[in-house]
Image (cartoon, rainbow, N blue to C red; front, top):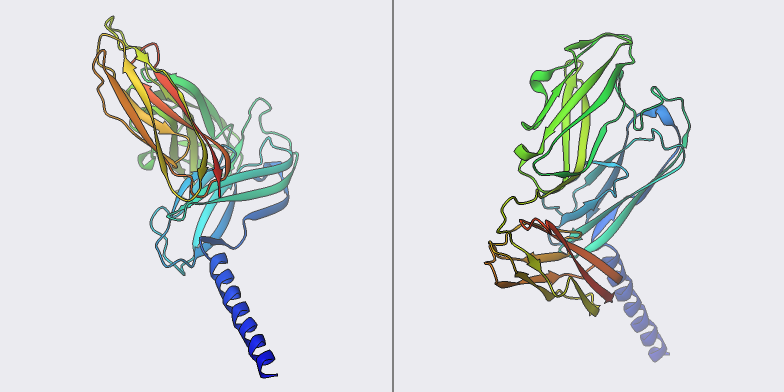
Length: 359
């Protein structure tokens, strides 16, 4: 009898230990109140809808959020960019616009937490009831407190770093009172110029806002997004317009140009463990007559880190070493590395890193 009771107590203690460990394991990483929010039925002309995801974490270590990606379907308004402390409550704010998206509506947001390298996916769902458009020819109408803009996104596509692009959007006062714009407090980069918007727009009237972007003065390369903010109604509201595109290097004018030669542009790491980072490399050669510069490096994931040294002398080769961190990943993974160079024939070089990540 004593042995039976002793065995039962032993099993009970083991069960409690297992349960405690399971609970501790379940509480590691970010703890979201919910990872999916369903807005239900909303009218297409609702305007911008802000969705908040709340979370905390119970880890003893400080954590950070990396790899925030809305996949182009919504706008990331705010998220904590500093260290996250255990026990505190945090918020990720997402803006979605149901305009011109009638029917079933779903948007996904991906993120990763470090140092545990855990991946998360948040989902926003709804059913958008169709509504009559303000201007039939517009594609992304958005309303801001009595002000309607034909599109709050300006997509410039692939543009040269030396180009100057002009775009325009329609602005309409759909309210009953005049709208006054506060240009003195507008947040517009010094290489973007706006005109055509009056100081005051009467009720029912519309204007055309012209926007000129001088990419040569921006001194930027690669993926590009800039936000223009123009306060109105004594600063109670803001007109926000996003400029989105990709800036590509301009061709070199010199005849003695650098020329890129690469034997391999793809590295397959085969089957790798998800427990620790590993390294690989590419070899790049300058077969031209002037120094080769790698002006910028972009990666499709923060799990890839590339080391490079420039310039590369004519006739010389260089090893581009990279580190691949598979923690938090699983299955077949393909990650891209984009090199922006001064070689006129190959201004952008895309490299591919492949791996099969196993637990």
